[in-house]
Image 1 (cartoon, helix red, strand yellow):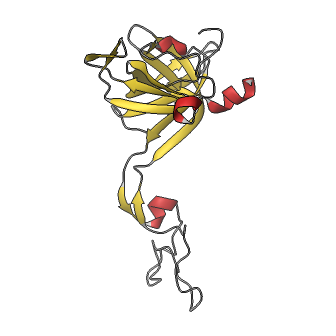
Image 2 (tube, rainbow, N blue to C red; image 1 turned 60 degrees about the vertical axis):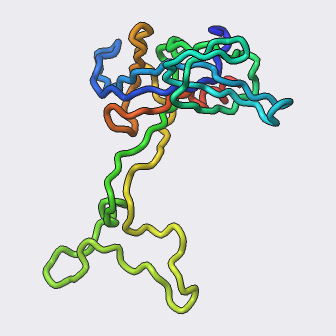
Image 3 (tube, rainbow, N blue to C red; image 1 turned 180 degrees about the vertical axis):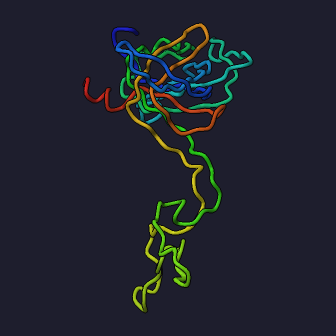
Length: 211
């Protein structure tokens, strides 16, 4: 397991941000994530399912027996497409030390919701003149067309619901781990409020480089 790195993902709760000094004395901002208990819930194969993937289960509470193996009751299931599923066995746990110090990970979180916002806050528009009488201060300008095509083009930046969207931050470095407390210390910041669940997976780009 340690020789060949498995493509895995885990769910964790964002504990908050702090800062650490690295080896050269530079101050590094980090985010601490409390990882949930993770198990291999199911393995999909080409012969039985038509595709190969591994299903991971998180936050196990109650034990139940499935095919002669004791599995916990999962609060959340996440599936990850994996070509080589021979390294995974149903019912086995995924320890935190599968992620090691210095490794790169991708973090998926949900951005903070900001409700209905105008174009200046939602898209960073500069707005119009601030002088009196201009009648054009925080608007987005003209959106529509003339008789042709007679509608607003899809994708136009307009006022609307801001935030509350899933975003992926790639290639974040793991600064430290704590196996006993199931903690990951990840360099930098990523979407998600304190106490919200985020997904941590082995960085896709780093896996492609090794292949």
